[in-house]
Amino acid sequence: MSFTEISVIICAAGSSSRMGRDKLLLPLDGMTVIEKTVSAFEGYGGTKKIVLAVSPERVEEFEKLLARRVHTCPVAVCAGGSARQDTVWNALCALGDEAGLIAVHDGARPFVSAELIGKTADAASLSGAALPVTAVKETVHLSCDGAVCSSLDRSALRAAQTPQIFRGDILRRAYENALAKGLTLTDECSAVLALGIKVSEVPGEESNIKITTPADLRFLKKENTMRIGHGYDVHRLVPDRKFILGGVEIPHELGLLGHSDADVLLHAIADAVLGALALGDIGKHFPDTDMAYAGISSLLLLEYVGNLAREKGARVVNVDATVCAQLPKLAPHIDTMRENIARALGIDKASVSVKATTEEKLGFTGREEGVSATAVCLVSEE
Image (cartoon, rainbow, N blue to C red; front, top):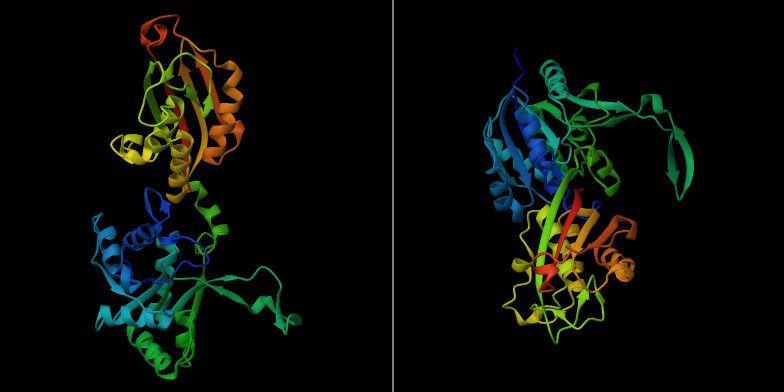
């Protein structure tokens, strides 16, 4: 099977301001969004070269990111600009005197199919300029001074997608003209139309969405990764220490020994969350050599772990924990423990299970030498 050959510019120099976090690095199919976008064009059999245009200060970061994978065609990173036209122009300069077809694509459109790339490339090879479009489904009104003043005929309206593909000479002339006249452009079709050149349209794909706002994350849900973490901890029982479990101080003649408050239950849960995200354990994050953590409440440590998970784009779905202790009796305190854990992790109490058991006076817990706890948690990467 033959493919129409293209060189590719991927625009990824935006600030993700409408998303509120870096959309290009969101997880998708075991990689990031931007890696998925690059991979989509590598999967199209006619791609000769890819130039990824990013913010100038992030060139080295994205070079390292792309170096993690083996690529099927040359992939280069260049500095983009503050506006779309500057970014595309910089990428055109990085491509050099490419005489064939050049595709320009949004970095945050990771679901583009090889079929759509091929259809658009075929159309551009015939007309010199082509883009995928979708019909506008909703009625569109024109707003004037804060009020609707007229309606537009939606049958003639089209929503533009990418990749937009053009002959190299046409695209360069279009951007030379745009830069010379100081035009502000949101896509390449607008630049080419400003030259008086018609642009062919091909049917776009509903799945070829651009990730722009938090609402668009729903399209990533089918790709969400569910991860399971397991935690285990044990602390010795000694005199002259408070017995604190699940953030609850429980009257007992012995207490748990440790650098912090030695809350074995919360430590096991924190380890489970960290383990699910492959972020090490509590010893790594709160070393017992650091006096800042001497006697600290483990509820604060668990809250830190919950915040860390959210910073990584993940959320704790549920926790199931078991405490092994001969004494004291824990049943009266379990409900409060669940409330404390839920509050620290920012989840609903109904998503937290805490169970307590003895070991029939067997082993170190049965001899009241210590208390152990195990925890399992489910974490969703969003």
